[in-house]
Image (cartoon, rainbow, N blue to C red; front, top):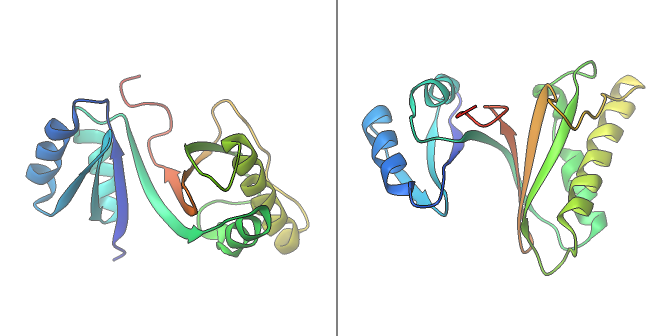
Length: 163
């Protein structure tokens, strides 16, 4: 049974409410973040979080974390991820980049580099690549950037939960 790093996003000011919900629902340790709460759990916990948390906006499951200070490092590290564990070449995906960095001027550029790494990973394995669909992708991916630290998440909620 895998233990995933799960980040549950919420609206500013609701972190404490969400924190209490997570502690009571999952009987574990959690950490308050800016507009979110971090905890560790199973795939079942990911499903329960999506269904039961009243103040959650999105449930994100971390699949990778690495340092990157330039395009080459970012591309190479993103391409090392075993993307076939998370989706197939026949599914669509999109990257939503968030955060900031002194190493990259544009979060959109970071998203584009990661998209290219994913497409190339699939092309090398299967001689084809999955489609990128900006609106309602089957596999929404979030890239969070904080200076050189890059965290890659699967968005387990899709659209915001209040919708």
